[in-house]
Each structure stands twice: as structure tokens, then as C-alpha cells.
Length: 209
Image 1 (cartoon, helix red, strand yellow):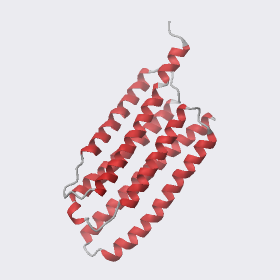
Image 2 (image 1 turned 135 degrees about the horizontal axis):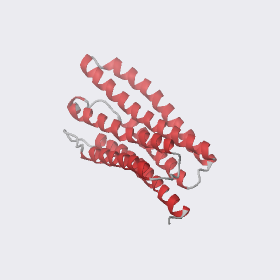
Image 3 (image 1 turned 90 degrees about the vertical axis):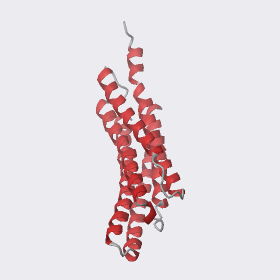
Image 4 (image 1 turned 180 degrees about the vertical axis):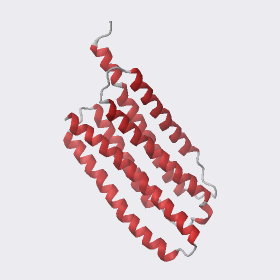
């Protein structure tokens, strides 16, 4: 016969899986920063693929555990929503890395490091927020982390407008203008994915406070 403690213990595994998923997102952001700082003619994509595969495997494992687990530590729809939001972060970062690698020889004069740094900061906040779920969801702590995330996202929006102005004033080649604009927007989208994940975590904290 299974005790309630055993059943709830099985539900607790979702904390670890979600934490690992947040760490995979951070790994992809750090890989991006390293790639942009590297001056190799052909950027390496292995780290992005590792992070993406890790996230994909965790996403599949979370979905399988939802099928197999009777009692979950969090509501099922909240686990699904957070897992889905986290899954999209490395996916978007890898897409940026692949396109950047494709045109790297023609992007030497464009600096994406500011947005990449913001993305890494956003992922670090996500790791903290997801880690708070296991510890009892202190609403004041969650509120502070969510405010930090919103601030990063707002600053990224402001920076994007500045980058657009600089890009359109200097780029004469229409094709490369679109490529570079697309890359800026992919980084912005990755940061938005972090904001989305943060919003899910914050709503879970509000619901369970």
C-alpha cells in the first residue's frame, strides 16, 4: 500500500524537472554570449544543440510524468504551461545562432552583445523564479523577481528601437537589412519567451500563496 507521503513525493519530481529545464535555457543563453564573443569565421553550434536537446528531452519527460503521476506538486495545467514556456527559450536561441552562423562573415560590424547579455540576465531570473517554487513560493520574493524580469524586458524593447535606428541609417543592402533586422527580433523574441515563463511562475505563486 502506498502512503500519501510516497504519492506526494512522486509529485515533487516536477520541481527538479522544471529547474533542470530552466538551467537548460540559461545554458543556451550563455552559449550565445560565448559565440558572439568568439571571432571564429564559422561559429560552433554544438552547445546550442546540446541545450536544445536537453530542453526537448526534459519537455518530453515532464509530459510523460504527467501521464504517469496521479498527484502532482503543482496543478497540471501550470506544469504544462511552464514547461512549454521554458521549452521555447533554447528553441528561439538556437534559431538565432543558426542564422547568425549562416551570415557571420557579413555581420562583423553588428553588435548583438547587449541584447545577448540581457537574455542571459533574463534566464538567470527564470532559474531563480523556478527554484523558488520548491521553497514555498514566497510572494514578496517572487514579486521582486518578476519586477526584475519586467525591467529587463522593457529595457530590451528600448534597446531594440535604438538598434533599429542605427541599422536603418547605416545599412544600404536591403537583403542584409532584413537579415539583421530578423536577428535583432529573434533575440527580442527570446527575451519575451523568458518574460512569458516568468509570468507563468508568478501566476503560480499568486495562486498558491
